[in-house]
Image 1: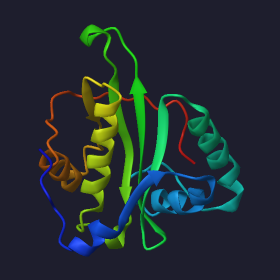
Image 2: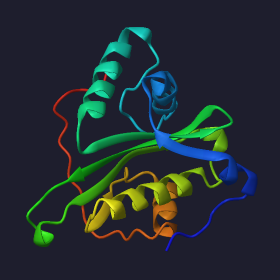
Image 3: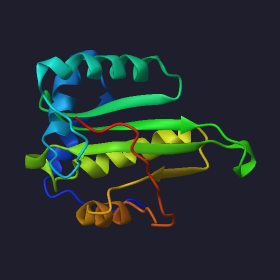
Amino acid sequence: MLEPVARDVNVQSKLVVRRAARADLAAIVALFADDAMGGHGDTTDPHCFPAYEAAFAQIEASANDRLYVAELGGEIAGTFQTTLTPGLTGRGRPVFTIESVQTRADLRGQGIGAAMIAFAIERAREAGARLVQLSSNAARTDAHRFYKRCGFVQSHVAFKMKLLADS
């Protein structure tokens, strides 16, 4: 059950969660670049923008991937991506992954993240997913508390292997 975390009811009532458009890309990249803890090497350097444009095009062309934004007063307040992964386990029902959840730093604690997660969970239900999963950097203890409030249970250990240096 999703626990409400909104401090300002007006924020949630004015929030629109929608599929990201190409015109949103600069604002989305700025959210990631502003995240010092992420360590992904994201930047607003214009020389790097073609790589973001190519990734956006690939996500947009995918049948199983979606990129979303949360819009507040005409500005991008947050973003997240989802992937529906078909599989044979769980009697062939897909798994729904939420990735790259980011709320603008100055707007955190107002229920934007909770609204994005609730929206994603509803898309998972509509897709017939058997479970919703996400991973989070081990250092993000505030995010972990947030995800637990949203109903997620820490059940697995994740492993990663970097193939390219973030730059």
